[in-house]
Length: 156
Image (cartoon, rainbow, N blue to C red):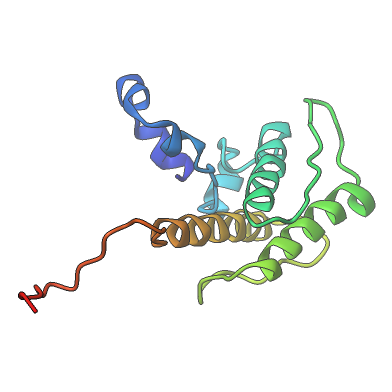
């Protein structure tokens, strides 16, 4: 779900959501230049945003068997370009190259991660790989599942 989609939900709607729905990652990949200029919640990068990206990378990495070690961020913590941003970018690249992507999934952005478009791309990559994985899991059939092709077999 995007940030805007979550904002539209009421408390009652959130209460009715299943664990599987709540487990789905939340991604903000629809930032605009206007968000940045107006300094909206989507237009500024803060500890909550970086923590969300780190946790999404861990969640998706766990699903596709790529070990990711997220860092927990607190207000006032300053990410280091050579260590923290590089680690995050490397994790996203490992996830993107370690599983399938959609044709419109962006490439992993290059350093420095200093624009809203690059952060949109990072979150979109994580969202797309997660969606592709979940959709693939939903389409699997297991032993004992019944499949029908719309035809019946008569008595032989």
